[in-house]
Length: 545
Image 1 (cartoon, one colour):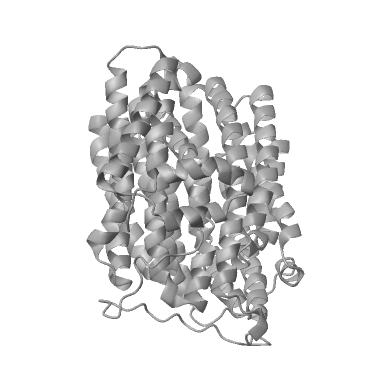
Image 2 (cartoon, rainbow, N blue to C red):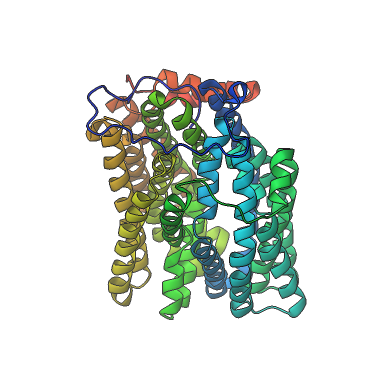
């Protein structure tokens, strides 16, 4: 979430483990900070709230469209081929994360700090160097992967390679600039356009060719087009660096951070891009892979609004570490509180509503995914909270710490899946996914609380709206489900009952947002939206802290 930060969670004088110093970025070739260009805390804050507004608008438009298109895909492909589509998407995402060697993570983190401090020459060298490395390493390997796994005609395969692999390898640094320049608003604008074009292409692919591979190829193509369109938002001095790849020396400490952070990102991609589908496919459980893919995908759609609020904070956190470290503890406390409240509301409303509608919308073949969705929804809510916690670690350039956290998470996931899938089937994959997310959250929460001098139990208290949302959702789903009503009536009744239970929990235990949080969120919204949003936010503003 964005907006002014209150005093909750500020770094104490007797912090158990002070914030580690951030390595200075080298000032080379004109890289000295430009004093008047250094971003202040207020500027970073305003950019974050503006980004949140546009990202929310993008989410409000994109999610319904993606939901409708996903229904068409699922009904046309069926359970098994829907799993095939998820498998192809996961393989590509995991492969790209592994062979990118953390270059993107490093460029955004080092670049955001340099840009916030006015070291523009450092940023330009980073962008130019990163593109050169990607062009000679990432592009050839991804091309081989696409050729080996795709089952499409030569024309579509060629287009997919050119737009989905080669173009991003040549000018993909344009997307890094959204994070470097803290242009989350522009990122959302570009994503809105590209998203609509992509969904249109997917519909054409489904209706004309009707295979999982054709849908996957269409998404690859328009992913590359999105990179081209991103160039128009990049500052001219950075745009020139992006389109002129050159092998230059990276700043001191870059690879020390980027390689472990990249490995951590690759492991994180295995968790976030449905490694479970890959394992299920390799274990010849094609139908289980399709059911899991639908539950996982719907959970991701469900938490789009919460992720939209959290996402714009990430580049701002990196800049905040550079220009105003004393405010980081406050930002941490508000982020936890606001993320947990947003996730709790979505759990208590959208999740039970969607669960009762799955058989009606997707067909009887997908009815078995309903209980999977409930559990994956709860796990997905935790994953949203994990994202900003990861940003705090990244802002301190602790790539090795992230690597260790993700190694633990993926080890837990794989171990449980390999042991439980032969016995429990798809539920083995669900249990593995949930356990890995819980492991990530606990390690991050304890570690960051210690660094910022915050009591761990205080941090856990900030998450109580999430637990309230879980309880309200499960109680409403079980109660209404036992009544035997129609799908639509059950969905509406469960959502209303669950939300009522959540609000009662918030006010009974005095948890959720406080009034300062509400003012901060409202300040990021357009005036007409504030009129509607204020009553809803005040319903959740039960905290006295």
